Picture 1 (cartoon, helix red, strand yellow):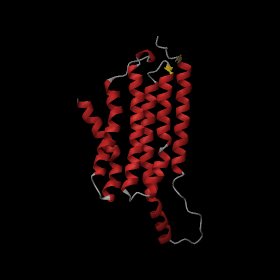
Picture 2 (tube, helix red, strand yellow; picture 1 turned 90 degrees about the horizontal axis):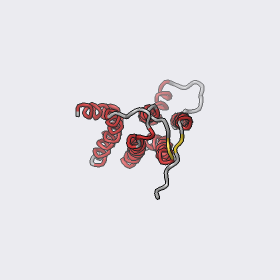
Picture 3 (cartoon, one colour; picture 1 turned 60 degrees about the vertical axis):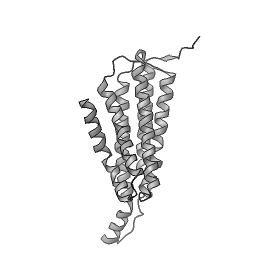
Picture 4 (tube, rainbow, N blue to C red; picture 1 turned 90 degrees about the vertical axis):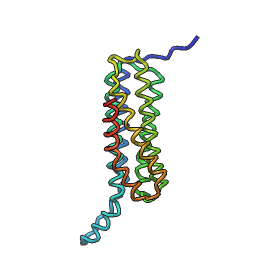
Length: 206
């Protein structure tokens, strides 16, 4: 006889949601620490200041990309929890895999900020994004299929929104794998929000 998974009521749903919010807030805070602020010096010329600023711009831009990605997944997670009336151990496990994937983002962001000119660094960053995307999508689909955990139904539009991000990242990854121009590969990362938007638009027309 198959053992039934333990069901936790809505108070546990709220506790898990708050835990997620706290972990994600910490991850976003750690992200900004990847930007190395140079020590204060008196009588610094504008030329030296701009030179120092130029040294950290890859870290700043990689922070912006990662912040956007984490915000998107936090929002998806927030909307998902609005549908839940209860959770079980399998959902909790999927949720912690999702949080684990997000916790790798500061490392991946630091990597792409320091080694933006290396193709392998860009690929590793995209793999990190793909891990987050897949773990988030699995969590969302698990809830979608577990109707007994839901208090309101999840519509198809939400499913398309979940799928738009991993598909957009996959498109960029395929391009990077077959392109050896690091300049094009790196700046393609800034198109992630646009590609996600376009993929979502295509899905909404289906």
